[in-house]
Amino acid sequence: MTANLTATSAPTAVEAVDLRVTLDGACILDGVDLTVAVGEWVTIIGPNGAGKSTLLRAVGGLLPASGSVSLFGTPSAKLHRRQRARVVATVAQSPVVPPGMAVFDYVLLGRTPYMPPLGRESAADLSAVHDVLGRLDLGRFADRPLTTLSGGERQRVFLARALAQGATLLLLDEPTSALDIGNQQEVLELVDQLRRDHGLTVLATMHELSIAGEYADRLVLLAGGRMVAAGPPRAVLTEELLATHYRARVRVIDGAHGPLVVPVRGPAEQQS
Image 1 (spheres, helix red, strand yellow):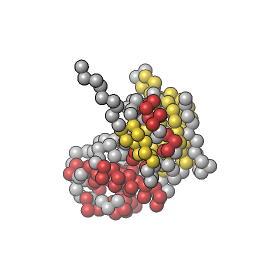
Image 2 (cartoon, one colour):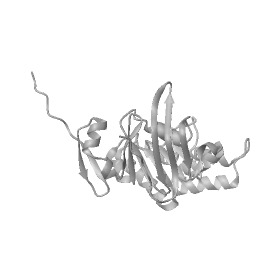
Image 3 (cartoon, one colour):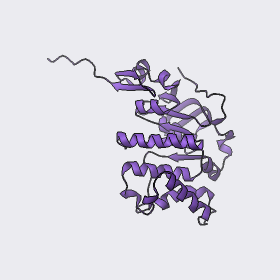
Image 4 (cartoon, helix red, strand yellow):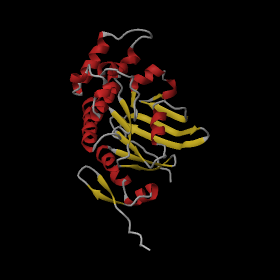
């Protein structure tokens, strides 16, 4: 079954129709339809190899794809690279950090779409970086090499660079994969606060199912490059769907903010 994720009547931030991606002769995405409303948080889940990161990169224009993608009503194909960078910001799983680069300089890279070719940053660019560092409580790290920060602090810096772009759509690829549970919660609470305060739209991928269900408005379940389920977390995180597509034994417990997925062991094998 292929499910079509349809947003509410709110203005549309992302609309992907019949999205297909083939890499090295292998079909990675096979006809995905996806709609995300302005201000919504949608998280893509699925087993390894399902196509989660590929879908995110295709929406962001980072991979060649057939079908169509529109961002805030404008076909992505009609947006020049600099125009797209002012609309959508991507935080990759493991961003490349130039050796020895200070936090301030890394966040300043987010202002590249606003700088003239071969030109320098303006006073407005510097002000934007100072503002973002202040909002994310990173000002004290401005002169520190990014590599000296903790995992949670670095993740905040990666978000700061994305926010410095001034984009209203955040694409977050496994934003908590390298963090302990405390830092996971801190980063996701920060994203949710920024979404509420600044009207951001969030499209993310995530492995941690319970956390995905607590923060996302809706979930998209991919398997084999196809969308097999979509909807509110309680409709997608079911024991039947997770057993079918993850081949996992789990219990799903209803929590205050969404369903909690608990792995359980199967019956012990008989000893010979």
